[in-house]
Amino acid sequence: MSGRADTTEACGAGVRHGGPELLAPAQDFACLHAAIHAGCNAVYLGLEGLNMRTAARNFRGEELPAASAVCRDEKVRLYLTLNSIVYDGEMGEVRSLLEGALGLVDAVICWDPAVIRLCREMGHGIHISTMASVANSATARFYQSLGAVRVVPARECTLAEVKTIRQETGIEVETFVHGAMCVNYSGRCFLGQDVFQQSGNRGRCVQPCRREYLITEVEDGDQYILGQDYVLSARDVCTLPFLEELLEAGIDAFKIEGRNRNPEYVDTTVRCYRRAIEAYREGALDEALKAELTTELASVFNRRFSDGFYHGRPIEAFTQSRRNQATHRKEYVGIVTNYYARAGAVEVDVKSHGFRAGDELMIQGPTTGVVSFRPQEMRVGNATVSEAGRGIVTARLGQKVRRGDRVYIRVLRRGRRAGED
Image (cartoon, rainbow, N blue to C red; front, side, top):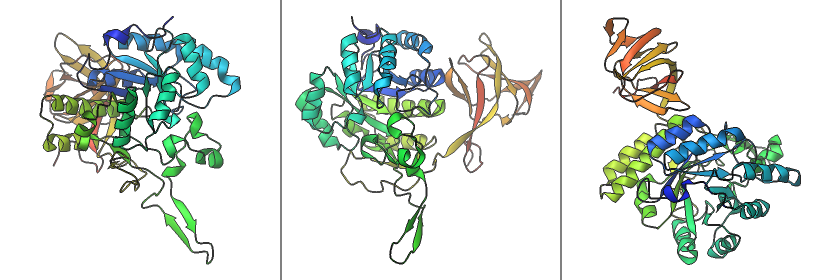
């Protein structure tokens, strides 16, 4: 019996959109819809426990059928992450989780041989996690012999090494194109366990690498605070400035990191990479467009950008900042109280931050995903207004949103409103 979802044939990479599969993270339904609406080919998610992002909201087991149905309807593949270290006492839970996913997911992202064996027994598609540190063709062939159809190479691999693995083995290759990097080898970290008793290898990373450290010189006791450069804190990888190199390398799937991230992060990153991929197909991916999209990517959570390891080791400016370097932030406005489809208008109960005509608003919800717009005409009661304070306000909006969705305003982190000079 095959454990693959009915979507496998209908929504393979390149069917919904041309080019490599664009794979997006989702920690909840809002992120799932945001990723789909922004143009992904596939989504990866975790269920509660036994994945490498236990701090994320994650989906409950009973929510998986609904998530799978959404993906089937949109011709998007769905992958389940089951890539943490697994102990003997948890094998029953692993089996139950995999049985519950039968027919609902297209593949399981894993690396523990015991999990791989169970996936083979049940007929689940097998994708090998970057946690396996696949860095050469021989290792990739080994996992092929166990039934794997795809590997995510070690993040320490250069682009040339990734190409060799793909060419020498024929196995599908998936690489990270955007998001956080770990200072440890393929993310296998023991620092958090030693200091905080929270294992990064069990998805409980508390990011000790992102902190300031006091260094003491042994002989004379001189002390130095290492904070400005955060020598253990890796910058985020961003491949958009050289995306054509990855597109020409024959990589099968472009993966965006971020199952701890919010819906606007998912929406922005997927939209930018989708637009770049489509522009490349049309011969229109030039330096101006790449600069524009990179600037847009910088508007959401990031720790500054680097090339990762794609162009060699060691990499220049690998570390510097631990804090969010996003150029914009969001502030809560209120909730949607109604949407008038015939009139193409949304009604919002402004509870906190007011807004003006032309401000950038984001509406987020578990079914809506993320909808961004700039209201030009607003009404309070029967009066047309240019600024909305607390209370009920309506505005033109051509895209459907839903009652109970949350409304935010995007503002520059220095306090200026988005779009102001």
